[in-house]
Image (cartoon, rainbow, N blue to C red):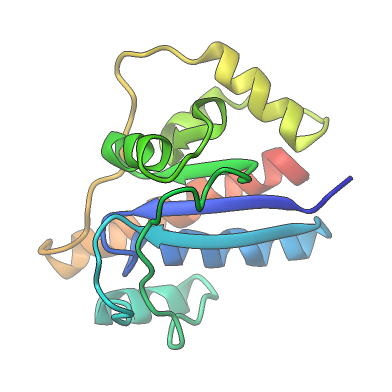
Length: 173
């Protein structure tokens, strides 16, 4: 089986997606899965570093974001992704429309964790089954931490880390 390619997408690629990508990478490595993990943002921020709060909060979840630099989605960059995870519906829409992600492998993080039935099996099969259970209404999102008080940013980071750990364990545990 080929390497599984997971991609996380948020608005600026400075908090949610790099944090979740780091947590997912750490957890899948711990589980011994052959996974390539990337993250992108919708905005063109020219290689800007993570938000200061993301650096601090990432450390609490075992993720060092010091060397991370933002990357903007480009046309076609997601055509070979096995899984695309956004945090808001707009991230998923942009991944599909602008970057070529397949709709059946693109979800918001809370949506996918909600749809994934705990169990065993191939990660690609589990994702197909989740897509088959998808409903087009009430897709849960994880809010943007930018401009929020530090305490709320910490809550968002903790929720992202928890959901991402659950996702990795359900897919590869």
